[in-house]
Length: 169
Image 1: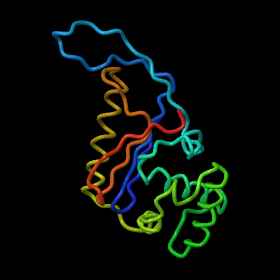
Image 2: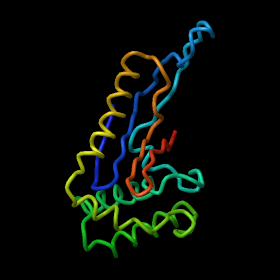
Image 3: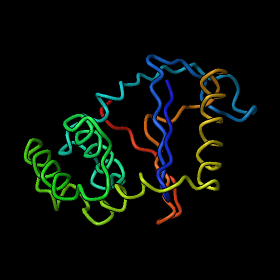
Image 4: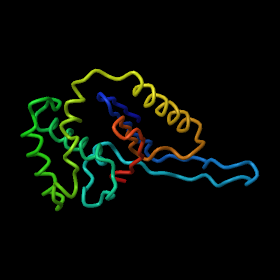
């Protein structure tokens, strides 16, 4: 299962390959390599992972995505402009649930940009970047060659960098 989404100037992809066998990428001079197995978790497990266990340098989009997913679960609609108060309340509740302070766990700056980006039109260049990475991951999964992304990939034009995060596994 692969999922990808572009929200204005940012995007992410999620991969859940269940139990997946692959051959690590190696140079021919190193000879044959034993196949490895990677276990992936579901999207709900990844979004429900404890913030206290998340890496300190976890990409801020992970937190923003989990907050937006919780908002959508509670309100049965996507987060939109004008929802800042409700989003902040959910963020505080989630931080308390995981035993962390909101300031320590979630970089609030950019949260409403993330929300507002969902209402923006897609950016073709960013869609091309994310689509290319998604295609590469599908080929790696189908061929069993090379270690797959485990399990989130975030890309933002704000930092012009892609980040892989293993959440909930």
